[in-house]
Length: 115
Image 1 (cartoon, rainbow, N blue to C red):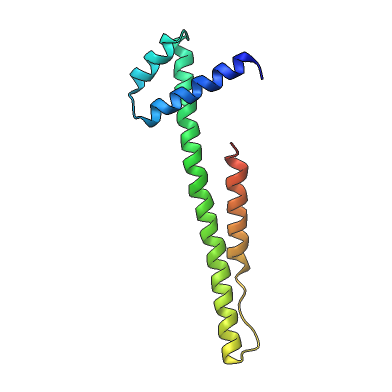
Image 2: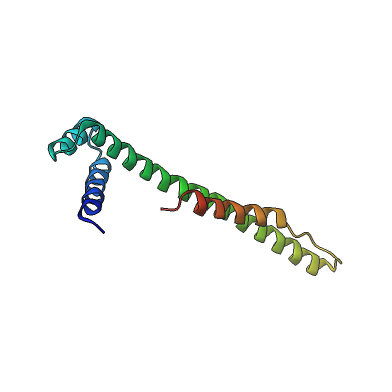
């Protein structure tokens, strides 16, 4: 990694800390400008950090949404199988649609929000 890459990552980390500390945009912008960067670059860094935070939130939201589908499909299928066994029925319902939907939503979360 080059020195410039390290500086950019360090600046993003510093801005992320300030965003998490709930400092105002003006304070964060002044801080970045005081480090010798242009105003447009400071705005870009702030926007990038906010997008990264939003992406992390959206990843977990989508991931747990998919897990809900997957687990509900498995649980309902197992309940159907249990009731079929206990009543002596010859068939049970396997809710593969819920399971496939859950897996695809989880895969989508990893594909869209890889970071």
